[in-house]
Image 1 (spheres, rainbow, N blue to C red):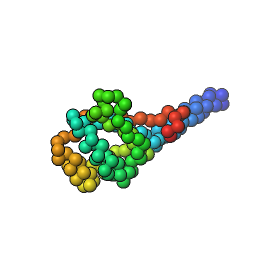
Image 2: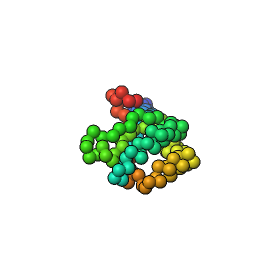
Image 3: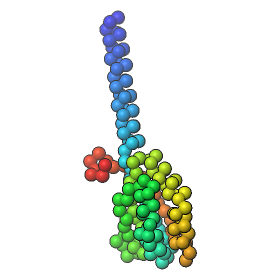
Image 4: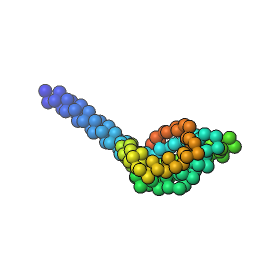
Length: 141
């Protein structure tokens, strides 16, 4: 009977340790910094208006609302360089991203800035958004 009880206890301990490890890994993944890659395509001739808006205070609003600017780029491709902005912001985690974007979207300064930039017509025609988690070997942790 002792041998059977020892075996059961060993199985329970192994199972508990595995569950604890999985919980720790899930907690780590949920709390891990996340990077958001966003690609904006503009209407013909409207990229300068978008760049002016970003450079004229939109990036400052990202920072105000808890986002970390990583970089902003225009593609090095003749065609895409005419209508595409690509940028990356970082968030503490996905929950922080939701909170930051919600606060940003509700900011009256953003609404005023957006509306003013659209006075000459619509700017953005498409947005592609992708969240990325750094790998264990990535310098971006």
